Image (cartoon, rainbow, N blue to C red; front, side):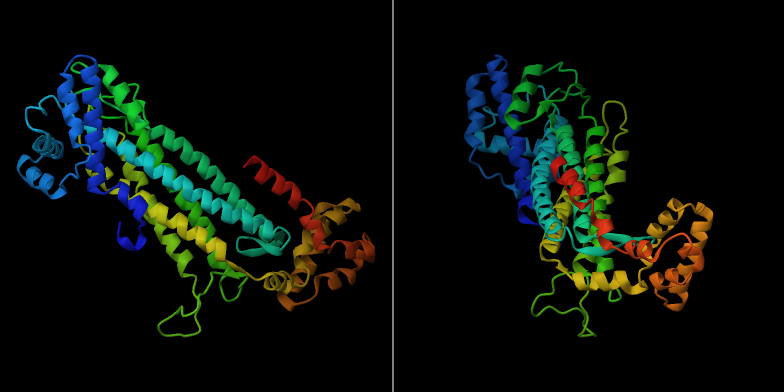
Length: 435
């Protein structure tokens, strides 16, 4: 991923030096287990650990790989340069390259998931804070982009909180899904290596032994992982889209924080654009790009082919680095989002009480009017508001068919905004107690 959308902690997981360090730890722990079983001499296993403080030379490994055309062999050759060829002769005993590659990939994904989970905690904290801050800040709810009925800004934040909390739960499961390792040999039969070696290596790396592998760890695990990242990215876009709408000039119920010295346009000095949330929409697309290739990686030939390898070298770092950046950016947007309660009220009242149409409809049916007739009475008065700018309550009070069923006091009562917010506390208890 390009540096513009990358944070150092996540990027470090995917650096070649980190990868080679994990490779080394796998090989060293495997040697320990082999020595415990009496398969290799203890002194050879101990010799491998002499390289524990070595900074492996990435350029030198690349140089060897240019000749061998094999990355794991290049690494093993470089390791032997540090500890001696005789001491290194039992390294990789009974193992195949995928034992190292797949186990390492899962270690990296688990570490990436831990960072992403911390990111989600930061975002959840921001959403919760703003939800309680604006629990009773009334705004108009919209369906199809059109005014519907009153809601609150707090409920909007609470809805996004609940969605992200579900996503956190999904990511925890996805982390568990990929937290496996395989040290099972050429086709997964343990013919040349004892299953105890796998158990030892996995324990040291914080993984579970893969119950059954071929030459690779099954890729349905990874498909689940990247699909989860795609769902989280879609939720980020969901929030970003709402904020982008609220910042439209015609709406302006909220906007991204605009710092001193910030410029919105090279041509128009008045502009304050929702650039961060627009950026998040684009980043969400990048994360979702990983999902279909991860799904297609599930089907491999027989015990293994390498059609998945090039895909994972790209989507592993790109998806996790991008999502890490996006979650942190969104948390910052939420923390600093500027809310305009007065504009929310003004927007809601733009059509002079029209948003109370359902309450009047229900009241008429409860007063004995058929639903069809009640709908006709309410709609004909509502259309005057849409088309002529009339006042909805005034039109109802002037409609003889309406007042034949409802008294002026009953009509007046139907325009109480508090009616629409009476269950906000119940919803908040559900959302935040469940979380």
